[in-house]
Amino acid sequence: KATAIRRVGGTFVQCKRIACLLFSRHSETLMEQLKAKLAVVTGASSGIGAAIVRDLIAAGLIVIGLARRFERIEALRQELPTPEQRARLHAIKCNIADAQDVADTFTRIIRDYGPVYVLVNNAGCLRSGQLATMAECEVQEVLQTNVMGVVNCTRHVFAAMRAHRIDGHVILINSICGHKVPVIPGHMPTLNIYPATKFALTAINEIYRQEFKELGTRVKVTVSTVCWECL
Picture 1 (tube, rainbow, N blue to C red):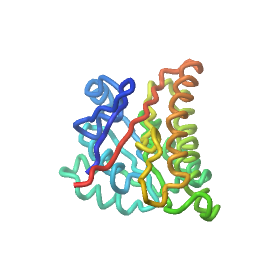
Picture 2: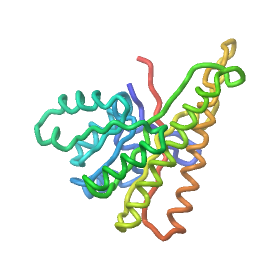
Picture 3: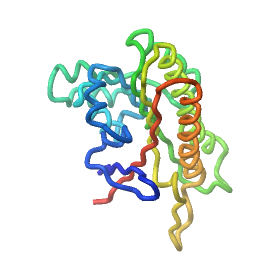
């Protein structure tokens, strides 16, 4: 199962629900204010992304799920308990690693659905192998998805938030690997460039925090760490 954890000072604390990782404080009040507002979740077809979609729908938001396997989001929509909830979930096919696809997708979203109030950058990619020997195309796929996908999605959403004077929220879903590179004695490392991309998210969060403030906006940015517990 997915476990949401938030870093408070130098300590990680566990959250009861995965939705609580979206906002650093006053989450219940904010979720109430965001009812009927538009949220976009990348990597929404399974796992953590799908869990976030369910929680946002339950909280009353309109949600657009982005994924290459968008048919899985359609299947998720059919699992929602009420017609009203199903009507608030929309699926769009998008490859986050493709900058042009991202640009076209967000142009469509803003044109057809209006400005985005919440962006959850959840999409991620991991390829097993050793950085010293693996193919460049595999390294690039991870970099383009985990780093540039976040940068490109955030740039388009932030521009719309700023133009419409929206006090929006940008969330970066991170990993424990963004705080410490795992070491398993006696085992060949297989995470390669993946931890580096997650460390990048930790830095990008602080960069956005400074930029959003100095650009005179009230857009908030939060980096939240999620891990999977083995049952």
